[in-house]
Length: 394
Ligand SMILES: *[C@@H]1O[C@H](CO)[C@@H](O)[C@H](O)[C@H]1NC(C)=O
Ligand SMILES: *[C@@H]1O[C@H](CO)[C@@H](O)[C@H](O)[C@H]1NC(C)=O
Image (cartoon, rainbow, N blue to C red; front, side, top):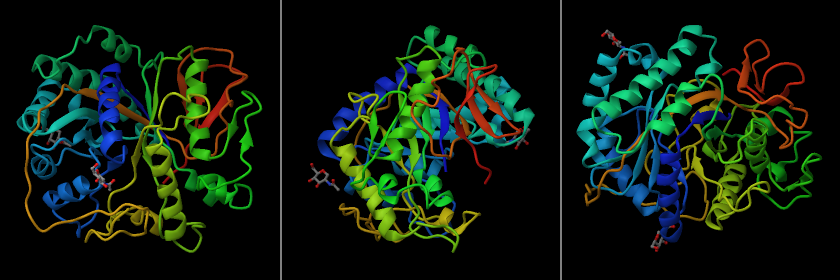
């Protein structure tokens, strides 16, 4: 589905970088999206066992579910928690923001490692101007609340600057949700399956950079790097907050099979284990949150939407990716500490094939611009814009 971009802050990168290096030694090195739109999932406590058995220590939630946060008390799992778009309006009100943080975040901080709060989710995907205008104030208010409550332990001055200039210039790293699956599904005759599944293939050459790509995901990541570079920033990291492949789909959803999903996620994990970077950023290991932990039986939309999970709700793997998880019946706990945390933002959804050097003609430095009519995200303003990626309605 997609790439949504998120504004992150240097602090988060530092935290993630640290946790990356420790994760790599002992485990899979990927994070996972823990979606819960289902009525048959195992209890969060059992899930904490499952993740532990998989050596997964980074989890992204779409909300701040207290049941999950409690279940992961005293574990070394880092959480990104989310404020959905329905909260944007209220979060512009400092009192309501403070209430939310005090009720939904603060009580869990001493035992659960919450490192990041996302504000809004793919906000610019929806033609809702009220949400667009609430986004920045909501981010600022949530952020200020964390600072006022003394929950942010860092010097914020330089980061706040980035928030304030958010609309003018995207200064901070992007989290992208990148789904080569959609590019393949939409054009199965043009997009080589091996290229999207990380299988041996001829690859493609980026005519602008002369870099060779043997898979689409890396090209998508580098396309974003390229766009960011065009805006004058070479110091911003791109991270993949969601990627995955459905194991099942409707008749018209070409490629949604357990075999392909197993190849996609299995091959991806191998590359992550090797600490691979992209061709444009060979020294920066690609950072991934796989979508998703479980199949979610209540998700609306085409059948694929309910079949992104690595696991069935009973803990059995949907397909073999070479790792064995363990979902116990028992309760578990141990010890840990909390880190400071941050406010992130999810902007937009990118779903199409992209070429890393797409922005070669980009002359102006500036912000990403979202064109709601064409539903395209552009890097920079004015004439000569080059499409970074196109969004797709769901
Ligand atoms: C997790 O790490 C342990 C300890 O290094 C290792 O024995 C085990 O195989 C790993 N499990 C997975 C699923 O990677
Ligand atoms: C926003 O605030 C109003 C008034 O306090 C409340 O009724 C509503 O439930 C809040 N919305 C959300 C999503 O929490």
